[in-house]
Amino acid sequence: MERDTRRRRPEEPERRPAPQRRRRNKRSPLSNSMLYIVMVCAVSIVLAAVGWSLANDMLALNKDKVTATIVVDDENDFGSVVDQLKDNDIIKYKGLFRLFSALSGGSDKIAQGSYLVDTDMDYRAILNSLGSGSSSRVEVSVTIQEGLTVRQIFELLEKEGVSTVEKLNDMAANHDYAFSFLEDIPLGDPNRLEGYLFPDTYNFYMGEDPKYVINKMLVNFDSKVDDSMRQKIADKGYTIQELLTVASMIEKETDGTDRTTIASVIYNRLNNPGAGTTGHLNIDATIQYVLPEGEIVSEEDYYTVESPYNTYLNKGLPPGPIANPGLESIMAALNPESTNYYYYALGDDGVHHFFTSYSEHQAFLNS
Image: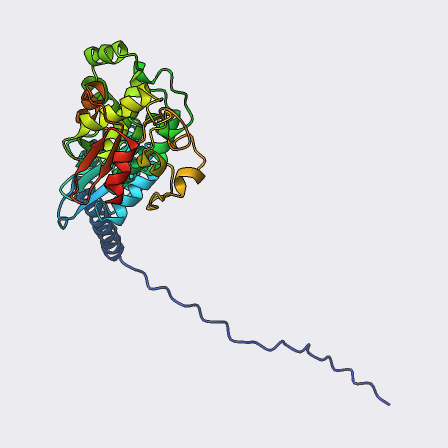
């Protein structure tokens, strides 16, 4: 067999067409510049709009008229103040207000109280309005009537928005007020101020510090029961506490013109315990003082209410005042009428009738 001596060509690889490259559309330098300018303008417009909005809020520009009362309960809780401003639409941006307050030191100047603010105030004016010397503090006039107890006074002050019962009780019980007439009265019980919160009409700031609220009433008492009156009390052999106790019973037992006559009955019983009274004052108002709110004294209570304030069971004065008397009752306790009366009773005519003996008293009650 003959060999094929012909040389074979090596097979050439299959040629594939080369991929076509995409041509990039080259932008002209002018187009790139225009795009950059548009982007810069857009960002500038957005920043300008945001800046304008922030400036409007900070400078109080273009705002709808809104007025709100802001309550500062705790001078250290600035966050609550900021929340109230935002929730009442006084400010729009809490973060910006916080930043401004921090940089200006305004957050350190706020004081406890209630303040009237509005959207005409810029950030600086708002901060200035939340201070103790601000003219924006909300003031309220409260009339404390004669004969109210400490508890009733504190409930009234809470109702008027001056402070809370809890805060007032705490300050009355535990703060050592610098008055000589309180020196011998121990701390720990808010009723230790019974008799010393002088009835009057007061102007208080809403949300005011309870220490200043109570101090204002004590200062008034200090000016009314002055040194000359205290000397007269001492000359009669009584302490201020004892005289106020008598005055408070007078206050609770009458609302008419017979204060000095009722005072004479109290003193006659205290000073002449053997004159058929055995030294018991027998005054219902002292029992009422320890009964629950709204409960009326019954004859059964005379002998069942175990309390040092029960003047049917205990001789002499109760431990302290049972209310806060006014000046008329204090003066009646200091200057009682001179009588031989040991008994009195309120008639159907709305007038107190006075008697020298138990038999007269009983005959009137039976009639």
